[in-house]
Length: 98
Image (cartoon, rainbow, N blue to C red; front, top):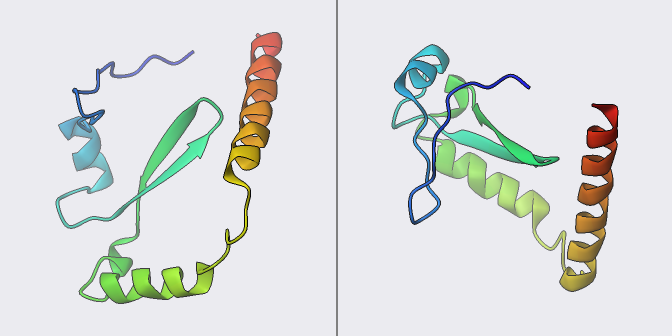
């Protein structure tokens, strides 16, 4: 396991991205970040600078329009059970690979 910078979330669950990482990735207060969940962790990726413009709100609204109703009628408790089952299977597979 590659151990990088270790941190702890505050009482609100927030973490600080270390300055050296922000500098290296060009992250400042105007950069939108994409957070994706995968396995037992998540990835934070800055969106391209070309997307971070005054049109950011317009882009977000377009994405929301395209996905509107995508989960309508979903049985959330059942979806969460299925997701948890997949997550546990992946974690078990990863542990057995070590």
